[in-house]
Image (cartoon, rainbow, N blue to C red; front, side, top):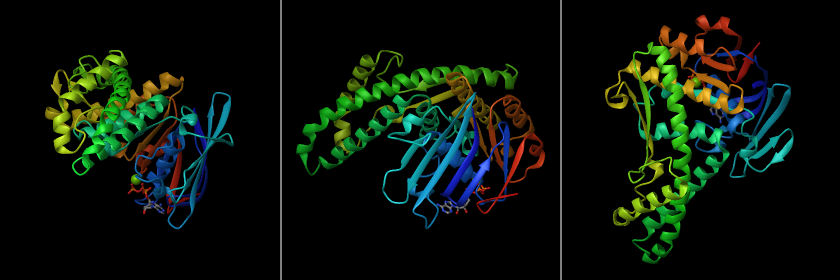
Length: 367
Ligand code: ATP
Ligand code: MG
C-alpha cells in the first residue's frame, strides 16, 4: 500500500499542509527544527493512532489551536481509502473516520496504513533498557494484532489500579479485599500478552537472523530469545497454563509486593535478548554489531508486517541513514526494493537521486 496524500491542519508546527507523495522513496529535507520529524510522526499517527513521541495527544495540536486534523489517502491495489483523525487540545476524546464514516476505535483503521519507524535511538535498542525493547515489540504487535493492542491497554489499566491498591493498603488495609480479583484478571490478560509475544518474537527472530546473515556474510549467527516471568517454562503453552504460571509467580511475591507497596513482577517487565554466535549483544556487542543487529530487527519487522497484509508497510527512516556508515546505508537501501519509504535528513547528499525530494522550512513545503 502507499500513502498518496496527507493533509494536516494545526498539527505540531504545520498550520496547513496538503502534500502528495511518491509511491517509492520520499526524501524529506530541511534544517533542524523545521518539521521533518513532525511529518514522520503525522504519517505514523495516521496509520496507527499512536505517537512515538507525544505523551499526551494535546502535544500534537499546534500551539494556540483548538484541534489538529490529519487526513491520509492510502491506495492499495485498486482501492483508495481515507483515514482521518481529529485531535483536541483538552481532554475531549479524538474523533476517528474511515472513508468519511465515524469509527469508535482505532482498531477499525488498523492494517490500512501500517508503518515501521526507524530512528537513531533504535540503533542502540539492544544496549538500552528493557522498556525500549518492549516498546519496539509492542509497537509492532499492536499494529499486527488489534486484540493484542486491546489486551495491552487492559493490562496497563489493571496494573495501575493494582499499584494504587498496593500503595493505599498501608493506610486503608480493607482495600486488600479486592486484590485477589485484580490479580486473577491481571494474570489472565498477562498470559494473553505472553502468548502473542512468544509467537511474534519467534517469527521476528527468524526473519532478523536471515537479514543479519546476509549482512555478515553468514559469519555471525543471530539468535533472539524472548524473556518473560520466571515461572513460565514454555511461553507457547496454552493461555490457561500461562495464567496458572503467572498466578503461581504472584503468590510467591505476595509478601514482597505488600511490603514494597508496588507491583513487582509480570509481563510488564518482559524483555528479549539478542546474541551473535552465542555471545550476548547487550553485554559484549560492539557498536557496529549492535547497529547491524538493530537494522536486521527493523527489516524483519517490515517483512513480518508485509507478509501479514501481502504488501510492504510504509518505512519511516527518521535521521537514521545519515547515522550509518556507507556499508550499512547500502545494506538498508538495497533491502528497500519495493514499498514506500520516507527518509528524513538535513543534508540530502547522495540520497536525492532516489525519488521525490520534499523540502521543509518552518512547517511549510518549499516549492
Ligand atoms: P531535527 O533535524 O532537529 O530533527 P526536525 O525538522 O525533525 O528537526 P521537528 O522535530 O519536526 O524538527 O520539530 C520542528 C519544530 O516543531 C520544533 O521547533 C518544535 O518547537 C515545533 N513544535 C513541536 N510541537 C509543536 C506544537 N504542538 N505546536 C507548534 N510547534 C510545535
Ligand atoms: Mg527530527
